Length: 501
Ligand code: HEM
Image (cartoon, rainbow, N blue to C red; front, side, top):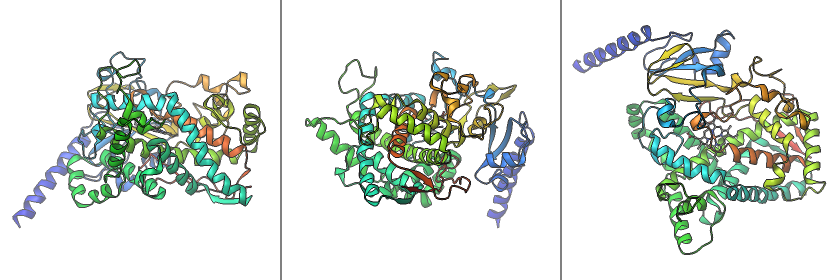
């Protein structure tokens, strides 16, 4: 009985504390009324921005909701992003200048987070991993290896499609299978190591991303309790955490030490980074440990499968809906690669596909795979005309900003010409777009390090698909379907069937 009374007192105190904070909060903004413990979950569910679209006036550019006890400020206008997306070029010492470095509150290391990038809140540790991974992802060696692997994998599908002349496939299922293969080849380098099936790799990637979302939104104490109950099961199921990948890394390290030549994949390039103290080395850093390699391979696999697969679905959907765009894509392919549909595609030839690049940028604008981004203020700061306390969460609605008629002419129209210079036949509209308006890859200090490789892959697949196949949307008259897989608000998939003729 005493325990019940005691619990009642604690809960009442918490509720009073919660509402005291709510009613005295600085800069009250429009948004649903929150409840203790669950915040605005009842009213909003898992997609705050959808709630905003339905319930708020278009002129409102800042509003608020609650994730449990955390107040989240939603940004709907790029004019508030200057400080949040402060870039390397704008500040000499970013660790001191940027108060928007964090994307989660706790700096704990449940699943090796402090060895990686995505949820790392400890600046010097994040910087180390980010430097190593970015160096490899941006390197020509990695790009060449990547382009080669994708073409080899695509050839295997072509054999089947060409035999059958006409194939109907659920593109969004196919794309996950394709992307899992690409990840294995470009991240780990070879399938020799008896890794689990491709399907399991996609599932593990989804779970890994789900884990990120979980760790972002749940306070440390809650996550620890829940982990004890069920989270460990999820950890075990993930190939990245159950030891398989550790063995791969250890084995490959030994092979390289015994003189095996390095290949152009992420594993080999990370293992050999900074081994020789040469001009290419990152200054003042020891080479990566096995644990660091493991975490970063897992993070890159998970982040690249989820995002690129969605981007590919959206791209094919948008292009296939627009015959005039297909025509221009084909004209460019013919100009750059000639009539032979088996020509080897290179880094250099891809660089000449300006229209295809514009089509990809337009697809990422109109149907963004990562429509929202989260940053947490560390220290007091003003954003817009308001001053905010440390710990305030900012939820940036990129989808809305990139589809706002104040930012783009006829934003609902899929029009790659807006991302094309006048000299290539475009309108050059993108040159007048205000700063931070177009941000499918986020911005500032933590901008997506996979941006370039994602664009390369999307270009490559566009050429491979459209140079040889007619793509019809079987369900083309249906409007695009969005779904959130695993990471809330981070991944959207479209279920679209394609007929390849
Ligand atoms: C079309 C595909 C992709 C989209 C739309 C996308 C989008 C994003 C966005 C919006 C962020 C948050 C950036 C910020 O906070 O400012 C991000 C972060 C990240 N992305 Fe991507 N991404 C894509 C592909 C990739 C690929 C292919 C990789 C790896 C090869 C990757 C690795 C990462 C990593 C590691 C982070 C965390 C960066 C950090 O916290 O410092 N992404 N991505």
